Each structure stands twice: as C-alpha cells, then as structure tokens.
Length: 258
Image 1: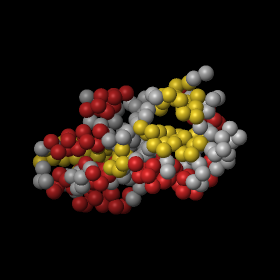
Image 2 (image 1 turned 90 degrees about the vertical axis):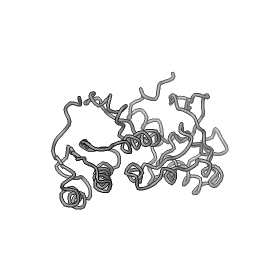
Image 3 (image 1 turned 60 degrees about the vertical axis):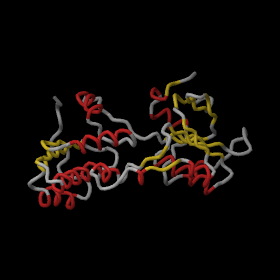
Image 4 (image 1 turned 90 degrees about the horizontal axis):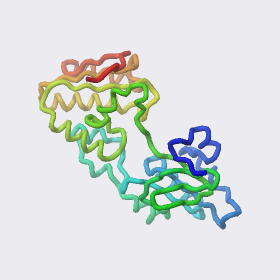
C-alpha cells in the first residue's frame, strides 16, 4: 500500500529505513542479495544529504548512491545572513550538483519526492519509482506554525529565509527597499534550525541600520531568557554596540500578528 511521505510518522520511518547522521555512514555498507552492490537513495540535497552522499562513495566506491533533490542547485544557509545584510553576493553561496556526479560518482536526480513505499523499498517521485536497499532521509526543515497560525500570512510576505533559495532573494529585496521605521525579529523557544542564526541576523541587521544611517529601530523579541549560544558576544552587540538602535526583549513570545 502506498503512503504519502507526510503521513508516515517518525517511528514508522525509523523502523523502516537507515536513519543516517553525518557521524554514522558505516551503517549502510551491508549488501542485499537482490543486487551485486547495494543501492543507497538519499532524499534531500542540503548539507546533510550532500555530505552523506560524498563520504559514502569515498569510503565505499562500490555503492550505487542516488541523491534526489528538487532544487536545481545547492545553496548554503550558513553565511546567508551576510548576504541578507548586504555584506556578500549570493553567488558564492550557490554550487552545482554536477560536482557530486563528476568528482564523486553520485547520481543526482532533480526530482520531487511524492512518497515512500516502505514494504517495497521504493521512493516515488514525479517521474516514477526508485528502488533502494538503504534509504537516507535528509529533506531539510519546514516551519511549524501549528501552535501559532497567525504566522501563516507572515511566511508569505515576510519569509524567515531558513529554507535556501527564493526566500532569501525575496527577504533581501525587502531589506534593500527598507528606508526607515521599525524592524521586528523574533526567536522561538528551541529546538530550531541553527541556534546562532537569528541572533547573528539581528546583530547584522542592526549593523546595517547603523552603517547606512537609517532612521530605524530594531525590536528583537526572544522567547528565551538570553541568547542560547554565545550569549556574552551577542549581548555585548545588543547592549553596547547597537544600544541606540536595538531593543532586546527576552522571555517573551509573540501571541498575535496584525
């Protein structure tokens, strides 16, 4: 029976696939009697998927490794805050997946995954089925707004840019068009992707306001008591370097967006 990917819960997935992190590539080396060499399918071409694919082939060249990624090129989220703040161009953050194929022998399919058929060990894409002996899921993140539905509209008009690609380009345009006023940045309670990211972004946006001499103020609303990483450095930025530009509000969660 075919199941949509979104309907398979975490417990079911972990019982049916090899869930590989970057520290455990050795788990995939066992062969199955169905093929002369094992076929590993990796869903997701972000840092996790790309790194896993590269080192699986490096450590065991006999493996057939297929990486499925919907986007046509890789974009790095690390360092993207510098792009948003106007400190670097987008180009150095983007890379072709051809390097994986040419240099490391990984087959890359630009396709969309529609579901996983666990019993048959097959991934369904928009182009058809791909069989696997071992499956690695590294699809990236999604925004969890189940308890905060008021964020739904904000995700469209003020994207957080934690997903690589068009969100960064659109948010960068909004920042470039900003000529003054108030900017609000929020931080949820953990866990969330890349804990330093919102704190770094707030500091860089404050720096941009100061550098461009904008008549603006930034309100930084943090659900946590203090920055959850590198607290001293970030607090020094908010309270010393940008004290006239930024207001840092702690232990506060957003209840509504009008």
